[in-house]
Length: 327
Image (tube, rainbow, N blue to C red; front, side):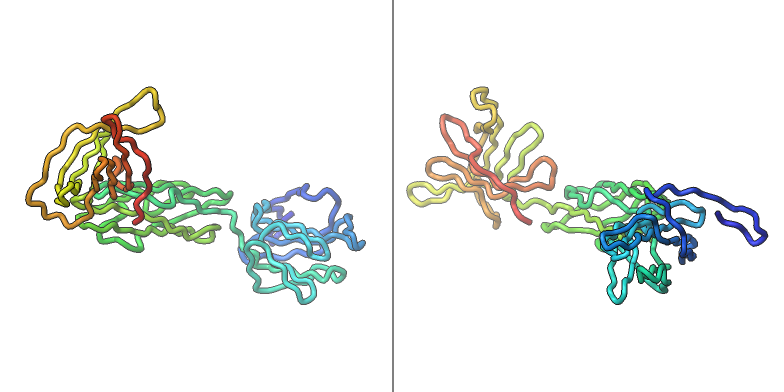
C-alpha cells in the first residue's frame, strides 16, 4: 500500500509471488522511482537458514518484469535476474547490474541490495540485421520492435555511408516502427556498405547497428543469368590445338530433363567470336573437352555472385559444381 502525505491511499496491491509466507523487513525507493522490498520467508535452505525474497516494483506498484524481481537464498546461490547482491566480501551479479548505494537486508544473511537496480523491461529488436541491395538506386526497410513490456522510444541515424544512403522516413518512433531508407546507384566497380544505428535509451540491447551492402557495377567479364534462366557468358576463352586463343561470347538456355529432375542442364543457344577485345578481367574458360569454368556469375537478385563449373556431354552442359564468390 502507498499513501500520500495526507494519508490518502494512492494504490494498494497484493503479490502472490512466493509459495511460502514472507515478511518485508526492508523497503527502499529505487532511483527510477520504484521500490525494492526484501525480507525473510518461511522457507529454509539446506544450511537451515531462511530464504530471503527480493522484489522490485515500479512507482505504480506493478512488478517490474524480470529486470530486478528475483529470489536469492541466504547463501546467495541463485540469481535469476538483473541485480547486484553482496554477501560478506563476495559480489554476485545477474545479467545486468548497477550499484550506487547499499542497504543491509538481514543480519543473519549478511545480504546487501543495491537501490539502483536498473530496469530493462523494454528490449530493442531490429530486423533484418543486414541487407544486400543491387547497384541500382532504390529503397529498403528495417523493422523495429519492442519485445519487452515497457514503452520504448527510439531513434535511427546513418553513421557511415551517408553520402549515398539516407533515412527517408521512420527516423524515430515508439515501440514498433519501420525505417525506410533510400540509396543512390553505385557507379563504381567496388561494393560499398553503410551502417544505421538504432538507439533506445534504457532498453536492453540498445544500440543496434544494422548494415546495407550495395553491389558494384559488374565487370565486363561477369556472366549473368536472367529470370528466364538464360545464361550469358560475355567473355569465353578457348585455346585451340595450335595454342591460339580464341575469344567468344555465348548464350546458354536452361533445359529441364525429366529423367534428371534435380540436375541443372543448359544448352547452347547462340555464340560468336569476339574480335579486338580489350577486356582486362578474368575470362571464363572453355577447355578442349568443352567443359566450361565461369569465375563469376551474377544471379537475378543483383547481389549474389557464384563461380560455376559446367561439364559437356550429349549436347548439354551440366552444372557439376558451384560456389559463392567471396567479396
